[in-house]
Image (cartoon, rainbow over all chains, first blue to last red; front, side):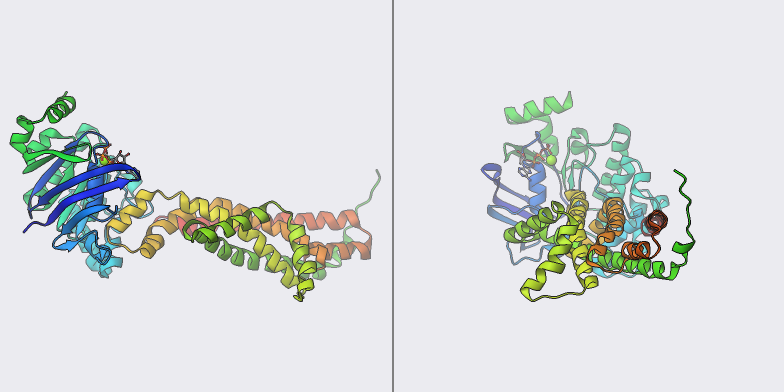
Length: 243
Length: 220
Ligand SMILES: Nc1ncnc2c1ncn2[C@@H]1O[C@H](COP(=O)(O)OP(=O)(O)OP(=O)(O)O)[C@@H](O)[C@H]1O
Ligand SMILES: [Mg+2]
């Protein structure tokens, strides 16, 4: 059974149709790279999956639950779906430890000592255990982004959504973040990642989804789709990002 | 030109001055606490309330910020009795000061809340926090930090502005001064002493607010 299933999803902002009859599935353990030009609806699709944006038509299922059903407990759902943003969005007034333990403490009522142990564990995964007492503004962009990933992992999600998480970083820092993603892929995490890192997508993703004008224009295995695009639009896109 | 200062008669009334000072402090503290409460409530309603409520709050804020405090005070003390609501001078003062500060505080708190990026709220919501938890753990402290300097200044302005309550004979520091003046005819000396006392109060408030800031926003 698929972990995520979008069927005929339509999302509009006013009269602007941003997702136009989008259907796709994500199987457990799959790693899907979402690519496409600016404004093609990539972020919006991720935000619809964890219910940050309501949709106008169609259906989104996560682990059998209908995300766009008003009856669905979105808070419970969001505990199982992690999302990491381009701009990190760490909480500036909280230390790295508190950033990570906040949700486990107040949402899951975890004890302080248990939560601290959890913080150490997820920080170890992103290679930042020694930064547990630091504040966000004392960290580099790459380190902040790794803390943001650790913060999501602390909720033990079944699905991780990544929205261009390396776009604000220079190449060196991008590398350290991508390494963390690769390790997560090795652990079998299901991931949906919007990225401009085509090389990384080729290496890590099992599937690639190319979005264009709010539609899934082309999709397929990473190797095939990226080396032999079937549509003119994808070919144009790829030559633009690769050069 | 050859004025000879004589503070002795004024200082002879120090107990009386002290009583006025105490009322000034009491009025300030009560109005600050209530005004902040009005401000937080007002800001929340202004931002998240139903449309008509937002309009009411906006009207309240503009009405208060564009009329003199003295007029507001007279409306409460001399106007309300026409509706059968008779208040003593101190109660009327507290109401007028609270209503006045509440309007300014509403604007300050609103600006503070709006300064928190939406992305912060979304990050919290995405972790499964409820709206209230997001407010309590993610929005509140950074927002307070943003609004703190403006709020502290407003509190000090309010403390100085409490002197208008002497106009309805509430026995605050300034009212006491005018009584001492009429007893001693040492106008210049009395008002020099009173000015010095207000100055000392304002400086003490500033120090206290600075200290509180360190305590509240220190990194732990
Ligand atoms: N909150 C919003 N209100 C109105 N329009 C929006 C909103 N968010 C996104 N849009 C519009 O939806 C369209 C798709 O936006 P989206 O952010 O999903 O694109 P994207 O593919 O992620 O682009 P980018 O690569 O620039 O991040 C754009 O036309 C954008 O202007
Ligand atoms: Mg985007």
